[in-house]
Length: 134
Image (cartoon, rainbow, N blue to C red; front, side, top):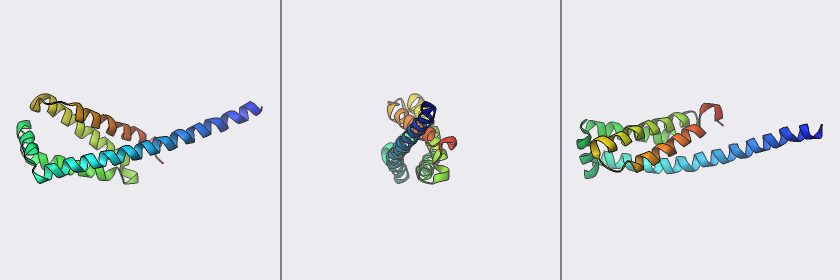
């Protein structure tokens, strides 16, 4: 009987520890993603020549640069709104799928940066999924 009483206690303790470490990881990744995406959006909105050239190569027009920047800002801010954290991370992951596609097709450049950002965004989405919400 004592073993059965100890087991739920140990399981609950492990769940609390993993939940706490998951929350810390999600926060650290959210800080990183926020900084990266706000910087990228700022460069797009400021019309940094490299950004203008990249969006010219993509072929959708410069309006797409502004839309992308606004979506990056929305996603980065949503990471800090409790009910929107999951959706913000998903939005950023979707943007990175588009970025990987653009790097591989139109830009012909190294897709690793958007792949890494996709993985980090997807990780935050997983950690902030509604069933795991605080």
